[in-house]
Image (cartoon, rainbow over all chains, first blue to last red; front, top):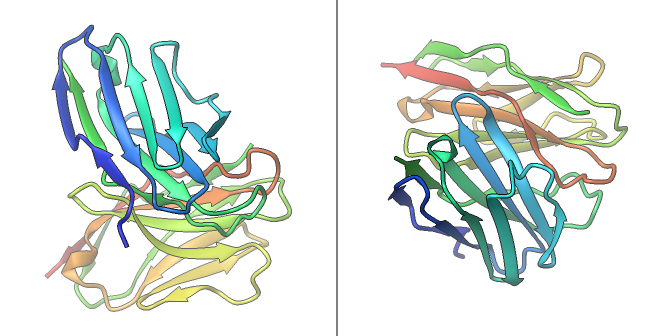
Length: 117
Length: 116
C-alpha cells in the first residue's frame, strides 16, 4: 500500500519565484495536513483539510502561502513570492478519523526540502 | 493550549543498552493521544507508537514501549536493546479531543546516537 507521496523531494529556487509543493495522501484518508520543519521553530502545522475542505489555516505564516485540495487524492501548497526565510522541509501527512478521535495516527510523506536563494 | 516538552536535546547510548527518551505534556483535555515519531537522517517521519489517555496499560510495539504516567503528565519512550539503526531524532507529539483536535503538537525532539 502506497504511503503519502510528495513532490518534488528537493526544490531550489530564487527569491521571488513561485513554488508549488504537491501531495497525494493515502487512499481513503479523510484528513490531510501540511507541516513545516525548521531548526528554529521545529515542526509546525500550517493547515489541514477534512474531506477536501480547509478546517484550520491558522498556522499559515502569511498571505504568500496558500493551500488547496481540489479532490481527495491531491493537495498543493503554494508560496508566492518565495523568500529565503521560507527555506525548510515541508511535510504532508494524512490520517483517517472523525473529529475527536484522538488515536488516529498521522502518516507522513517523505517531505520536500525547499531552499530559497 | 497543549504543549510538549522534551528536555534532552541529545543522548548517547551504547549499542544493546536500553534508552529512555523523556516527554512531558500539558493539556486541559480529558481525552488525548500521545505519539512518538522517529526521524532518521534521511528525513522522513516514521510513526513508532501511540498511547491513549484512557489506556490502562502502557503501549508496546516490538522494542518500543511507552512509559505513561498520567498523574505526572509524562510519556517517556523506552527502546530496549538499542541498535545502530536507532540513531535518529525522536519526536513526542500529542493530540487533544476538543475542537481542532486533529492537530498534532510536537516537542522539539531528542537526537539519539547509538555508539557501537
